[in-house]
Image (cartoon, rainbow, N blue to C red; front, side):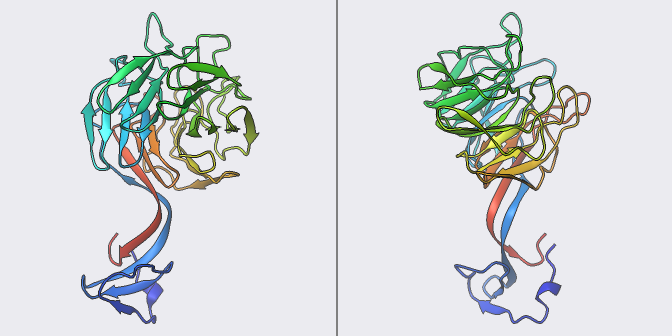
Length: 336
């Protein structure tokens, strides 16, 4: 709730409409709406959005805060799902399903041109490299990843993407592999410096960021690596190491790391959110509800977090959606 005491004794300007370029902390009276208003820069906060129609976790996301896609995931018993939903900034609508139900799937792109790859499909395949493209109406199966993978990171578009880390049936199971998608085929390129299951990611196929996850031995890591189109380089670490963290960000110099959980296996979820400026991570406001294995979409300043699980012991699938915003706000004094 805004307080009046901060403006006591201050002369308030009277306007018939809100000023076009108010200053940080400026207060004014709008005589047309008969309201006292103020302006500030929101450093970043989460607010509740429209709930998914189907609660699930370990799902993938693509798109922006106002035009997102959620696909695949785990329902709890009876298992994985192929359900796809589209978000318009207010509510989710169920659209055509993936061809292959799975969880631990990675995704990238937009809500009209997305890519979904990898995941866990159960016996007899278990770890899949299956890749599907979304054209705004339907999913189409295309060429598989070279290695079947679960819980990898993924960034880019449906014609130029990067898949990194994850878990595979190989030994050891935690992967350092990176694969590059050119719109037709996946090609193995230079590995991560550290094997990593369940990392978050941001950026594009030629300029990406990988962070968090679980390494070998199975312990959460706060490792952060920067991809320049050829190689990965270690950079400054996350403040809080966690597995199944998710990322949002259009570049590798401006991203946020969202949620996750603090150790492999059944464990307390976290709502910790950190912002990356190209050099360092800074902790910002937490998710309203701590969750892990969420889906995410958007950018560092305008993101979406949806679904996920709320442990500690028996994960409960969530339909929650939260919206992250940073930027200018004009508010009415007296509004909460």
